[in-house]
Length: 347
Image (cartoon, rainbow, N blue to C red):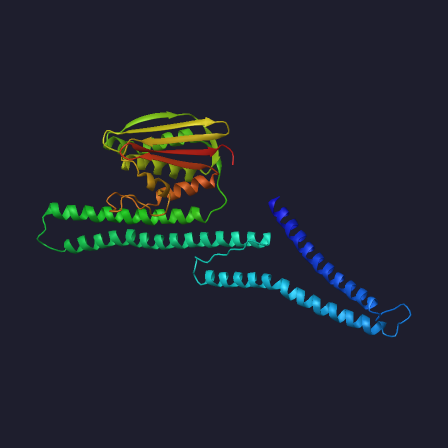
């Protein structure tokens, strides 16, 4: 509806502009004819000079029309020139290029769309740079660690305990690299997917209960108390993808929780949606960082002391979006973090 109004507005503006041009030209022509009659150049009986006078009037009208068209189109050509220069800046990587057209209305819309596009491209460029920097750091760090400890293992004077310790570190760093590669592949897979495939109807409550059982030993390792209230709810979706969501969120409740902490898991149906709430009593997230938790490679712990590569929640959000759902995060430092996922039962 909005696009139709835009087209009608542009057509109407152009029609009015052309009408005014024709009207002015006609008025000038009529005034010249009247002037010729007034001074006696044209009379009803004096037709010998009529052809010459008409030709003169036509030439004057053409000249006037050309001048008027040139002057009236000057501002339009100037606006187009600005647009060309701005697109050239954008094509050369200058995402600060902006347009400021206030009239005509369609040029104002063009400027707003261009500015939005430039802003989006600038944001993508920042994300791309951050992705490269963070990926390089996450990939390089374990490789350096593996290389260093592998070189130390060549020494013959190491005790069995030291050798085992260094081997354990190499194994952990290898697992870290494997996890990074897997998450990057998973992220690449879901980011290039716009249409959800391989959907089926299944019990999402049962799937979450199974995920809890899979991670039971990890919950017990930190003596975490589980508060589970999971209803049987059926949904149409990609079972494998949603399983990644629950495992990722539940693992985070373990990783960032305290010993003897609490994790609450609630699943219920609300009208045509299924609402999943997962909360922990862990370390929490700073208020300013809550909006960044879904960004690629973002980790609030800049020292990277906490295991992880900052891709899990990015994948989670993309999977939820593919299911036409939403995910919200709330957190208080030292009190805990909660995630609320809303999914439609039918796609």
